[in-house]
Image (tube, rainbow, N blue to C red; front, side):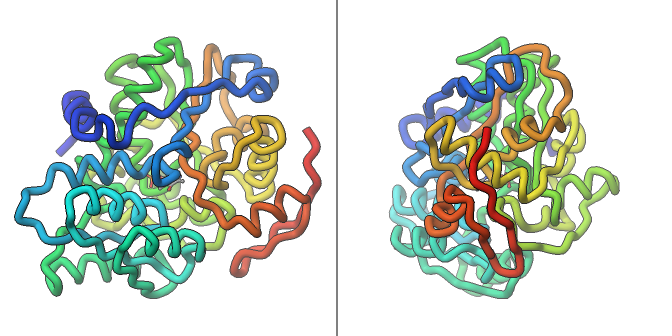
Length: 335
Ligand SMILES: *Cc1c(COP(=O)(O)O)cnc(C)c1O
């Protein structure tokens, strides 16, 4: 099985008016820093505050009418997207999450009316529970990343970015299960085969990065991170997002917690915007000098804004923070 541009164009029709058309805006600070236009696709402006709505709406809109309910595992944003999409169709949503998911995300999903189940301490345990519910409760499972309609939904971001800026040379894509990167790379390379697409993850528990190096899906330990939305495995039986990322990504790059913290501060103090750690790993990689030399405009996807506000305020104030067993020492913002 693979995915082609036509699949992404189909998804574009399914999500139109519901989960599309976010702005692509320049960052003067990052443009000055990198010496090339730096453009940010503001998926933080989706109604659920994250791009995952695209894949969720793309998948849920394609379901037959006799489906009573949907289920998924989630690090927070996919569950919010699936619940929102299920509401559009009057279906019930059962969202399985691990105890690592920040409380703000859990509450956001409950507020939309989902039946939330907290199981275990890893995204993999949440995934097994969601798979069990398919049998036990007759629900349809929507994978956060390994589903053709989810990937093609996320791929519409690539279509919109290249429609707005056909001259983009490099795309920086936050990378976890790889649904976003697989979709964006499929769309972007179909339109411009010369474009470079780079996946970026945090340096602790980067499942896709390790899997591509190993040549097959591998399990990684899961850690607390400022980029909590990037946690979790890719599934040992991964069918789609792994082969697409392996074949289409030009590189995968890892960033540290301190680099993510700094990029969140840049986003706030320079671009005046609130974004999750997972959303600014592209900026983090560029600010840390970890990217290849851009030869033209650089684009990144600012994937979500659903963060824990008390931790965010501490990071901006330059205070130390603790998330689970993770300690990130504070540093007041300095350009
Ligand atoms: C899910 C998510 C990602 C990563 O997407 P994948 O398709 O799993 O690679 C990045 N940022 C945010 C905010 C997310 O919710």
